[in-house]
Structures are given as structure tokens and as C-alpha cells.
Amino acid sequence: MAIESLKKLVTKKEDLTEEPKYTFPAIEDFFKLPKMYYKTVGLIPYDSSSKAEKKVSEILLRIISTVILLNLGFAVVMETMYIVTSFQNGENFLESCMVASYIAFSLVGFAKLIVVIMQKNKMTSLFQTLESIYPTPLPAEQDPYDTRQYFRYCLRFTKGFGGLYTFLVFIYNSYPIVQYKVLVLINSPNAIRVLPYSMSPRWDYWDGWYYLNYFSESLAGYTATCGHISADLMIFAVTIQVIMHFRRIIKALREFVVGDPSDESAESVKKADTALKELGSLVEYHNHILRITDDVNNVFGIPLLINFAASSLLVCFVGFQMTFGVSPQHFAKLMLILSSAVVEIYLICSFSQRLIEASENVSFAVYDMNWTGADYRFRRMLIYIAHRSQKPVCLKATIFVDISIETMSIFLRMSYKFFCAIRTMYQ
Image (cartoon, rainbow, N blue to C red; front, top):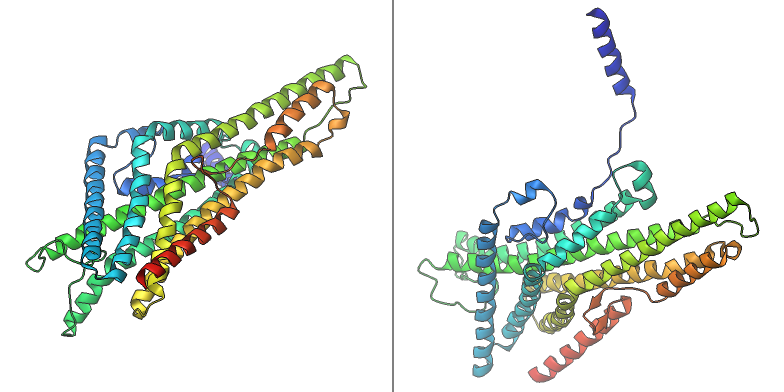
């Protein structure tokens, strides 16, 4: 007994002196934040292989998502009716512009949420494809991919972008009611009940309907914001994964050892055949990544197109209001929504540009190889992968727009043209 106790004590001491084992991020960690935002509105973007995910009541989530989306649609209809009424009466032009910016924001969020419902099977297939090529949780597998660095990179952008939009909807949802309560406490005659988004009441809410109406509009604003956040975070996470795989291909090509074709020994021929098979697997791996980018564009192409068009209107409507004399509080809210829209478009363009550069660098990696010392079969295969890499991949807003950093300037020019048109109409 004493010997066994001594062995246990020695084992514990050895465990304490061992170096800490570093954990590697799993693929689910990259998608944890967008899935969280999706679930808050009752949606599951894809079917996970995890058993815990399958135990969630899908019927309850469908009921929640249906009620939430109907509430968002009702809010958009009422705001549209307000704009129509204002134009018919020829009044409240500035307020109508503000409501129009809410409608543009809501339509984009609504479209992105509908995509999840309509194309859930494609999203599931996309995730399963990424999961199948993700490295196993072993240092020898994960270190060449540098998964920790890309995971930190993913968290930096997803948390920052998600926090910005969460702060935006929190300010818009809470500011009117907080302002009203403060004015009531100080017995101010200016204490007026105001809704967070609509400029006029849907009905007489002074007799108990105000808080229900306020909750409805706040929920609609949060739903639209979740549509923006979750879809964009999903795009960012997938794009980072694809960039990681492209750079893994680049690293593998540059470290590839090419045999000597002048050596005709049996061992040298065997090594050449092995190298040819390894290169063939890299070519197949490269084609696999290219197909993933096509799947991403098939899923998010239409929402991205709507995003660019609606965000241009949003920026010009908000900018138009900022050119007039508004209160400091209202100016701060306008500045917040303007910066959020511009940051969203910039990040999409920036990630697409990084994707373009990563896919193009594959051809440069092929050229950097010692291909002059390879046999003709090896060189012919290199020509194939180099030729395919010269057509870079990017995020696409359907077939109409190939997104890159240059798209940002197109977006700003379009917004300015809309701004000038609205300014002319007002004058």
C-alpha cells in the first residue's frame, strides 16, 4: 500500500511538471458567434454533426422564427405606409428619409435571414465540406495550417463587427424610452412618448398600447440587425477558412521537394512517382477549395447584391439628414448608423480582396518551385494549377458584381449619386 501511494504521489508530481498542453480550435469555434446570433431569432443556419444540436426542439425554434420574421415584416409595411402617406400630403420629408433608411436596413436583414431558411441544405453541405478538410486536433496537423492565428484573426473581426452592430441596435432601441423616463422624472413638459423607429403611431398607444408597440418595434430592429450580423459573420468565418487553405497550398508548393529526372535509378523513379501523386493530391485539394468559394457565392450572392444596393440608399439617406440642422443626440445616432453601414461594406470588400490575393499567390508559389528539375509529367501538372490560379476567386454579389477593394469606391460613388438626387428633389 505504501509503495502504491508513493507511485501515485510521484505521478502527480510528474503531471505538475509537464508542460501545459495547448488546445487547438475546432471548426465549430469559427462559427460559434454567428450561430449564437442566428439562434436568438430562432434559426439554425446548418445541421451540425453534434448530437447536442439535434436535441434542440426544431418546432419551437420554427415558431419563434416565424413570429419574429412576421413582426419584422409588419414593421416594414407600416413604415412604408408612413412614407407613402407623407409623400401624398407633401410633409415630413426629412422624417420620411429617416424611415426610408430603416426600411433599407430592415430589407437587407430580412433577405439574409430568409436565405438561411431557403438554403439551409446548401449551408449544411458547405459546413460539412469545410469540416471534412479541416485538420485534426494534433500539432503535426494543425501547425502547418496555423489554425490558432487564423482563429484569433477571425475572433478579432467577428467580435468587433458584432459588437458594433449590437451597440447600434441597443442605442436605437433604448434611447427613446430612456429619454422619456428621464424627462418624466424631472417633470419636464417635453416628456413625449416616441417609438424607436416609426415617426408616427400605428394606433393610439396612450392607453396601454405604447409599451407593446415599443417592444414590437425594438424586436423588429433587433431582428434586422441579427440578419446583418449573423450572415456577415458567417461569410467572414468561411472566407477566413478558405484563405487558410489557400495559404496551406502555397506553403506546401514552396516546400515541395522535386526529384532529379536525370537520375534513372529505380529508387529515383519511385520518388518521382510518389512526388507526382502528392502533387496530384494538391491539385485536387486546390480544386476542392475553389468549389467551396462557388458554394459560398451561391448561398450569399443575392443577399450581398441587396446589401450593396440597400446600403447605398441607407448611406445617402443618412448623409442627407446630417446636412441639415439636427440635434446633437440625433446627429450621434445618424453617425453611428452611417459608420456601421460603411464598416460593413468595407469589411466585405476587404475580405474578398484578401481572398483574391490568396488565390492569386498560388500561381506565384508554383513559379517559385524548382520545376526546372522535374520530369515532364510533373511540369504539365504544374501548368494546370498555375493556369487555374491566374483566374482569382472572390466574393460575388451574383453575376453582376465581383467584390474587391475597388468595389468600395463604386459603393461610395453610387451613394453620392443617390445623395445628389435626393438633395435635388428636396430643393
